[in-house]
Amino acid sequence: MKPAPGARRRLRLVQAEAPPPRRRSRLKKILVRFGLLLAAVGLGLVLFKGLETFCTVEEITVTGAQRLSEKEIIDCCGVKKGTSLLLLRRRRAEERLGDLPVIAVAEVSAVFPNSVSIRVQEREPAASLLHQSGFWLLDRKGVVFAGEALPAENLPVITGAPAEDIVLGKTLANGARHKALCAFLEALPENPLLEPAELNLENPADLILYTGDGRKVFLGDRERMVEKLALLWESIPHLPDNGSGGSLDLRDGDRLVLIPE
Image (cartoon, rainbow, N blue to C red; front, side, top):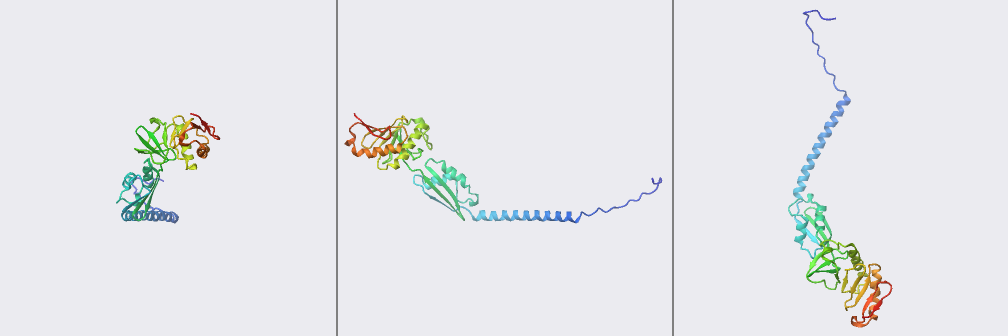
């Protein structure tokens, strides 16, 4: 029924219903957890800042370096005194050290509260690679890692590798030469008394070895290299002295043939 004209309307206030107790309890828990989270984050930041100030790098130790100086290694890895030990980028420092041709393995460790330990393993020379007027040192894996004016003492000289094959910090670019070289270098420890003077890699399918007394030895390809070098060592006492008597042929791998001059 509509109110009569001119009649006064009465307003009635209706109080909003309170949220159910369960909803209020859930909201309260959320607010409490959020507050605890903020408190934990704040406490964590305070502790981190405190530790960051306390754990500053005061000492950097280097072990295993021979060819490189401690300063060269520290400068390369990027670790500096006065920086926070908590912010040490260990893997990045190890990668930077690994980029140095002479370094085979690098390990960087945080030593709390104030030290950094750098351990390196440098490449061991296994041969000298002749290149123009100088020599490159090679490790047993065939990696070119350092230059020298003279060949390394008591190590074989590698010849026959063209300039385009040689890159510092890498193996020989020619895959066949690299495999032949590695086969030879890996076989040498099995025959430590042999002490060859030179290995020519010009033709990796027909390797030529020169002994310390000037004998020319045809090795053929890289197959059965350990057996070939062992047979050469066993045969040397029975050969003419002073490298006379022609060349030696070990290409078959199971017998030595004396080639007359």
